Length: 320
Image 1 (cartoon, one colour):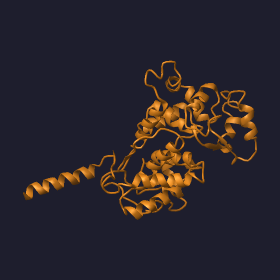
Image 2 (image 1 turned 180 degrees about the vertical axis):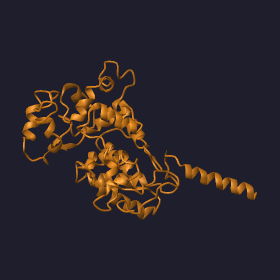
Image 3 (image 1 turned 135 degrees about the vertical axis):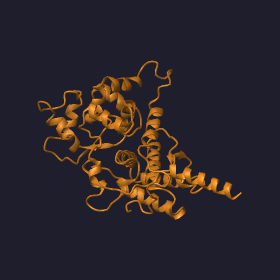
Image 4 (image 1 turned 120 degrees about the horizontal axis):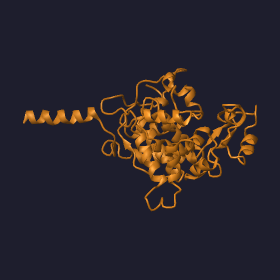
């Protein structure tokens, strides 16, 4: 009996140490975590209509640096990861602290900040009338935060070859690149990210020739040369408030606002993915942008996660 007892205990601990993400990870330890996080996101959205793209972007930026470990939330001085150049404009930190505080009051020391980021991103997508999906949980929080580790973030000025390489390094396919980039269907960008594309595009200077001539004057009017680089404009021309595939149609028509989005139509593989959502027989072939986006989000949420005995569970998301 003693031997059997130790075998059972050892097997249980071995399972924890190996660790796996799964839907319902907290069903016995903190069963109400998802409703609590959802409620916080809805409360914030009531006074901040832009919070959905902010929380979606926060999850993306967290996962692309050291994996989905909540490291972007740490605020431990000027060298903290969140201050990296590649994380410019990333926000939502106060929402994570608010959700974490409520979760801690209910289930102290149980739920990771990394999981709260992933859950909040899903809730943000749903708020924007995007697809709902089951979020795998069981991540643990990282113990390293350094801005130098965020040097290889995907950038709006990256070529399609560089973007494909950066996504491939994270185990993501060309299809994942397209549908995750299409998260730009909601949200805004700053003129800061448009200056080179509008006025000093390489090679030769001037404007990016891939911009549709009917869109160019509008972009220049919003972001004049030597103007205020902090002025914001919608990323999805004509449909910035709705989560839909209009941004992919814009990419096909030369109405992509960001250079990185436009580049998706310059590569044969990514172009075929974009076009696949507009084929005559796409609905009959089961091709769904919403379903593919949901699958890509789940896949992204698995990048280099810490589970089991790895990492830690922070009591405050911004501090080790």
